[in-house]
Length: 474
Image (cartoon, rainbow, N blue to C red):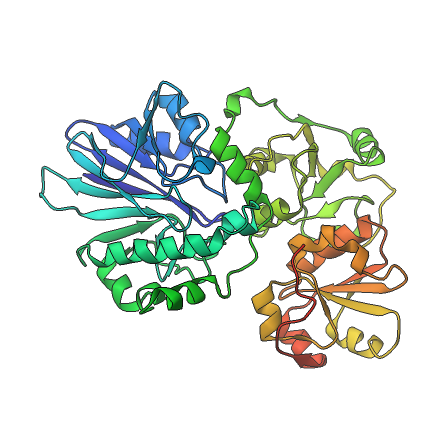
């Protein structure tokens, strides 16, 4: 048996290829939409990708199952578990086989057993892997978004992101019973999870790529909760804000993502087109770095610097999927990579992009302020500090008097900001702060961004801890 691990740092997402060396067949688990790495790995190892599967309807990235099956002729195995709201709409396609708890199939000499592990989602399944030529006992299990290193998948996404009210507590209780089921499995089993540290699919994921079930039984907090009620309280408490694009991902992955070959090729537009797009109210994201944007940018553009691994997540927070998206790049040579990143979260409606030469003489700056300067100005009227970090970050420590609006919810809460005030945005490093400031400036606010991190503003400004009564999510 051969096992290969693939990891997307920008989405903290893991996928796997399991190959039977004897027969040359291979299975890919939870593939991303960019399938070239799987094709290259299979060719290198002399394997044919004959089977593709996924653990659940993903919320944080566009599944590559259809894309990979179309390229290889592989059969897709999808969950038939859960209620009718979360059945795959493309399950009737001829190359799709639906599987239930207790089902199994062979990939050459490798046996794949299906275990229903609901909680993160109702249809979630895990895959137990046995190399039948080497042993009659399983080697490990692909747990998707059920069991992570040091954590389990959050059960609230259907409610918080997709709008299915009343589902998060039900999911938490299902997750408790899924954990209980895993208590009965052998400690030696290797655990191959679907995400690592940085994913919003849990609250405390470890950075180690794999673990063993025995280790998780000893040290994962999910296995330490003694009663169902304790487990539910623990699991629902302290979950981070789910990115708003998660709802779109659920929809796309349920319906079946369009094949990339069917998407139009974006065009390298010139400055005049950029001016026309902005004049017509189009959404343009400037992906240059913070310094370049602050020095000079086209009015109306929003800065989401692509030099940060999390840029695609933050862009997903702000993008309107129903409108065309245009991007301004630091270099047109980066277009292919950036477009692949956008398509990884389903931003497919991209007519074109612009290089830095599209910047006209009609540019503006984004005012930047330091913590020391802000401390001098704050006693005066006319300054409103907006903290755009997450709930947990704000509760741990924040600037006294700061209004708390997490970045992803800012577009829906602009009416809460005083139009006559100068808005100063801040976060933990200056990255989210600048995104927020560029958004507010594009909306006509008088704005400055605090370009320093926590170490600076806690030194010069008065701080407090605790949850704000204003910390509500639109």
